[in-house]
Length: 83
Image (cartoon, rainbow, N blue to C red; front, side, top):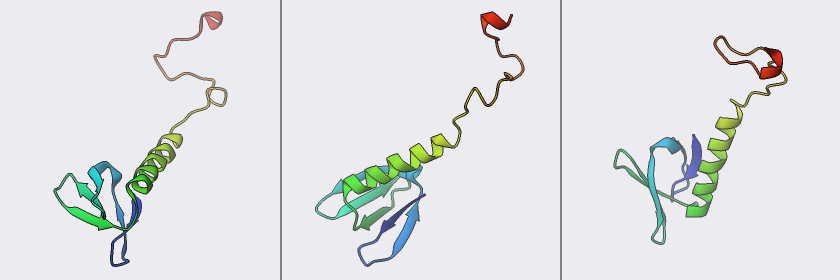
């Protein structure tokens, strides 16, 4: 989830996977896939930055260091030097 601030100051969290479009006209409008629109104080660039940071954080949780996990999962091919 990413936090955004409505125009009246209320902070809300939205699921970035449900963002369909963000536009500045001049207020920033976040349109969700449900059709709902949220007017927020953050700029378009700030929203994009938060979504990118959210996705990076999410993906980094699944990065596996191959040196710390030397045993391949069942069915995985072994490197030629280990055969």
